[in-house]
Image (cartoon, rainbow, N blue to C red):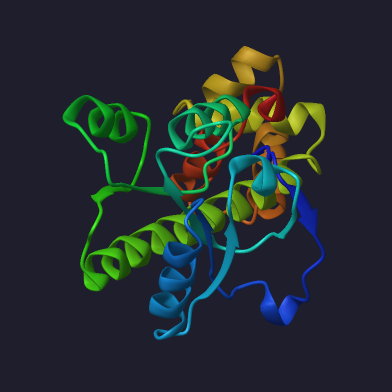
Length: 220
């Protein structure tokens, strides 16, 4: 599960899929300029003058990204990235700076930044970077949702069914599973059928894919 360091505000289902770009820059003009650029393509923004303001705000849980200035009062953009990574937060980050250098950009990119833009940048450069970041976040969210569903399905299995599922996922045949667990082949077939049904697996390959996405404790 992804840990969010921000406070989370309620958001209606109708708005939950709309992208939100969070801009953090101590330059009022830059924040307003980015808001206008992104608004021109239908993307909503929230602006903050410092990382402290951002961390203290209740934010809606929506797909999007962070657009961070590197040099900020208090906690810098790069330090915020380090903090978010330590907390397990995977919201994509685009850095922008008027004082960029190679070591700084390398550090940001190695830590997972989507892009590192040097001011002044072209509007299209920012729009392209934001589009990539939002799509990355949408894909991540879909994966998290799918994994949560698989974990919920695995929780419906009995301990014995989990054992059978783990054995099936390693490629063992019914006869081998029966020997390993001290069961009859008929009993293994029954458990195997229950596993396929409860896990909503369409094939053995699908079951293996789902088992691979589970935490070890969920498999048994």
